Length: 615
Image (cartoon, rainbow, N blue to C red):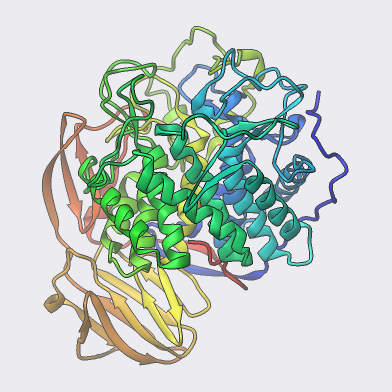
């Protein structure tokens, strides 16, 4: 039974276009975020359920004897998929499952009510509600009708509406975005220079009343998800009402709610009820505050964001980019053992580092380290480790389709689950394993967050402004200005094939000594002039080839992750080996990088006609 949407008469959407140029190239077999974006398209579309209104299967169990994925109340995080999909298509040019993208787009328009809010259907979705209100999914009360609105996720939906409005200015998307802003404003309480939602969910016809007390903890932080969408709507479409409301929300969260300490410390999710502190729930606020700073230059919010970022770094392992899912973890529903990571917060930290760098606070080395290591390693790029017979798969209590949340096994599928999950991201990795222990493998909130961050990093490997091209990250990248071929970490070499006349600067990573750098243009050495960490290659012309070289070496480090000791070998910023090794999708199996001889691969590169400025 297909779900009954609140507005089945919404305008019919057309399949979006992603115009650009495709061409074959031989490139170094090193990290290629365009290729990762192509895989992400698979993970963002194959895990939707066309028989149920293109709804997401939120949980994936790769380690079951019959790998399975199934619906739960948490399916509403699909809003993250909705926003990420057009971005990773722009980076990769992948046209896989365009009909599924169209179906998802139509579903979200059909879910927009007369008041502008996005309503999730309940009829025909027996997994759609838990047994009782659950603040983690934004349910402050149990809806009594046929639809409910996850206000927390409306910010991601709003961002997606804005992206499609940029791609299709004549379509329905700008009107839908502005209508959603109006809906959000009506459920927002404004007090002087702050604002917050009256609840984190609602349903059609529910009266908006000022709560007796302002929201605190997680209930306050949830406002940031909405604020980010509002600020994105201003940056994309110029909606000043969205800007004003979003800025006031972030001022409340970061300054007044007590969710952060004076020095950026993360405070409890439910004060007086539990000691748990959720990492991603806080890092999301740091990123959202920086969204405001990008739009307004708000120095107060920049101060709070910088302090929060510094604190977050201190609570993780900055060489690997491992950040724990919880602080104050004492064991919980995921089983015994140390706390796992959650790729949501890894993605947030990378995105925040990119935004800080764009704002003049150079964190490119953080972006480089974390992207190359925990982030890249925790995307499912192959499934051979699940099918080669070396690990013993698990009998679950509810096999073959174990339940999660409020759902039972009848609300899942075992159809081609492994293939459909390729491109997704681990939900609960350790420092050396894709899956910590024998538990669940993927929660797709992580996939939605991480796939958007793929675009954030891909977009800003290079930046072009007023004739100046900056190469900020030494990673593979095709663009209309230049193509970058990175040999790192095989060797310290980056080749830049210039496609337009530009003034070129190339940033050198933290592990390289400036005096060891050499730069050639068309085979001729040039004098090295440094501007901070950037080489000034000067004016270069279409057809020029620029080669930057420097020594690369290995070093061994000991790191402590969740009270566990690991020995890692790094080559540049890339971890190329870890001991002890993992078992369930072991990470850092990178011996091929240690030979010093570049391996090559033939790829189809894609350069979009227009990039979406989104980070």
